[in-house]
Structures are given as C-alpha cells and as structure tokens.
Image 1: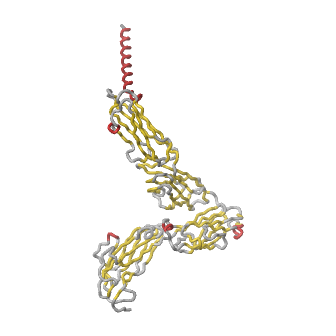
Image 2: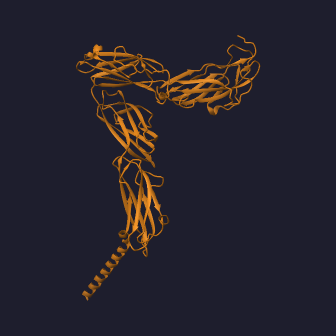
Image 3: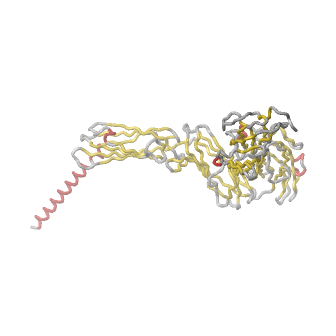
Length: 546
C-alpha cells in the first residue's frame, strides 16, 4: 500500500514537471526564434549625425501578433523627438509572419566627453499566435565617442610670486564640430583659497558663462582675475558642455595647478604717477616700472621686458630712449648694459625704468567690440612676471537737435523761426556710449523762459519728467550698454516746446541750454558725465537786436 502511494506521488510530480516544461518552452519560444539587433557606428565624433537601424526577423514558424517596439536613445543625444519612442503594431506594419524581416531607422547626434560610451536600447514585445502570454526581446548597441573636436585651453600660470596679490588668467575655446552647438556653458571650479575679482565677459555667480551658439571654426575668450589667499598648491578645473533637456553634458574638461613661490623681485608699476590710474581715450601715459630685490642675495645681469597689450595703444608714439624698441612693435627691452640697477641689484635695492606712449583718439569697430575696455602691460624681470591692468573710462556722450522730419512728433509753425510767430518744435535728445556699460544714467536741462514745455504729451512712461516749478526737464535713461550709438542704435527721446520769438538775436534764439548727462561706469566704478552744446533756433525776418 505504501509502495502504491509512493508511485502515485512520483507520477503526479513528473506530470507537473512535464507541464511546467512545456509551458516554459511555449512562453520562451519567442526568445529563441525572434532575432532583434541594432546596427550603427561604433566610433563617433561629437555632434556627428548618425543613424541607428533597428532590425528584427521572425525565424520561427508561428505568427507573432500585436508587436510593439520601444527604442531608447543614448543619454545626451540631440534628437527631434522624445528620448523614448513607442512604435505600436500599426506603425510596425502589423503582425510579423514566419520568415519576415523589418527595419526601422532612428537619427541622432551624440554629445559627451572623449572616450564616453553611449548605449542605445531596443525592446520588442509581441504575442505568439494561440498563446495568451506576451513575450519580449531586448538588445543594446554601444557607441564610443572617439573624438571631441573642441579645444578648451586653460591659460593659468603655474605659479605666482605672492599671496593676496591679483593675477590674471584666461580660458580660450574653439569648435571644429561640423554642427552649430547651442546652449553651451563654461563652468570653473575655484579652490577654497581663491578670491574672484572680475571677468570679461561677466560671469553668472562668478563661475558660469553661457554661450548661446558656437558655430564651426568659431572661438571665444574669457579673461579672469583673482587673488590667491594661501601658499598651498591648488587646482582649478574648467568644464565646457551643453544643456540638453535640463541636463548638463560635459564635452571638455581641463585642470591646472597653481602654487605660490617665494619671489626674488618685487615689481610695481605707476601710470602718470598713480598706481591705479584710470585712463581715457587719447591720453598720454607715462609708465614707471620699479623692481626691488627682496631676496637674500644680490642679482646680476637682469633683463627687463615690457610687453604692451591692448588695441588702444598707439604703438607709433612709444618714447623709450633707453630701451631697445622697434617702431610699431609692442615689446620694449631694457638691458643691463644700459641700466646699472639691472647689471647689479643689491639686496633691498630698487631700480626703475620708464617710457611714454599715447592712447588712440579714434576708435575702430575692433576696439568697440571689446567690452570692459582695458590696456595691459606684461613685465618680465629675471624669473618674475607680472601683469598690470589699466582700465579705460568710457565716453558717455549726448547731443540735442531740432527734428524737422516729423519722424517722432508732428511739428507746426515756421522753422527757421520768425519773429512774432508761434512754432511747435520737436527736440531730440540722443545718447551714445563707447567702451563700458553705464548704469543709473540721467540727462537733464532747464527749459528757458521764452519756451514752453508741452505737458499735454505723456512722457513718464519713457522716463521723461518735467518740474514746472524749476523748469527742469529730466530723462531717467537707466542703463546704456557699451557700443550704443556705434555698434548699436543710439538711445533717443523726443519732446516738444512752444516758442514765439519777439526779437531777432545774433546766433538765433536759445531753445535748450547745454544738457548735462551722467552715469556710473560699471567697469571702472566711476561717475562719468558730459555736457552738450546749447541748442539755438535760427530766426529769419525782423531786425537783429544785440
């Protein structure tokens, strides 16, 4: 009896195992007979337009019904669709019959660092005929970014000679990608012992610069200045990448180290007898470069090189009687045989060299394209190298004129003016600005007693207000960007006055006295101002009265 029960149990177990095996075989059928693969390039360039081909084939003898394909692009792909695409049965062409093969194509541009691996994925699900269970097959394809044709040069000095002293460095970038890169950003990670001073162009939060568009063979430059607060060796890291669906994808990265070394020379510079001189266009500059031996031993046979860097320098005006200099060149060489202090400089002794140079009066398109205008003198003495920056003050200018074209407002009455006749004149104020952004700009003037400001016009929305008690007219301009009136349209405002001259005076009748404009130069942190010429209206007819 016991043996019979045991045989029954064994029979039941074998039956269940057999049924389970046949069920597993039926549900895994698809994985054995459906071939799914992704074809594409294994090595790619950043920004290169590539094509993935998804191919599948039914190698079995059963129809595969209601297929669905999910294709997932690699992370960081630039695409014109969703990152994950779903193709339903209709889009796939319906059921997949035995022996049938189909292909689908997907295009993208891949972004990432050199050597990074990008993975595309495909999943095909379906229901074999006469089975109620859906099956799926998955596959992946790996591409490696072999080259990123973007240069990112981090020009950081390997050493500085003192802490708590400003030094300059730069980031240069260029693209050879055969595609217009959009929404780029450059980030820099400073060490904890670094104090940021300024950058050109301006940075977001002192460490981010956004580049809207970078075409093939285009380049750019970021100039920075800061202070090292300790003598430890520190790392600076700069990253360049693209924003894609709110994700920052790094394309290039560079790290440089900076250390502070004990100097043997202390170098300083005065311009026009001032350490922090702010220059103006057309200035004549007197440079005095001093060097002190702060080491423990005398120094011999030194050479001092002064390199002038800046498009505003008029190099043809350089006057350096004791230096080796070729007219039109930007480097001056001071040798020991001409200067006793360069030949022998004892401990704690100071030597000085000097030269003169003018700044250009005329400004060109090239000069105006450089915002936050400055000139630089790079001085090298022995193993010591220092960069001295002199900021250039902007020219905030204005003018006023009578508009006779009715472009801004409708004028009336005679012009030129006539005695005992009333005219309504349109006055235009026009503002320009050369080098640096200006904030808090205002322009003001007094309307003379012989004229009447037309209050009926609403000017407040344009920032123009009139004080009837003082007869003062004020234009609250606000910000005036660099290049306004040169590379950009000037800022303008128009208003009208009524005037009825009673007598004819030499030179015409005074309409508006010299208008005064002022604002804050945001680069040099200084108030700048200018006064226009007075505006007179010509009178015809009547006897001239002194």
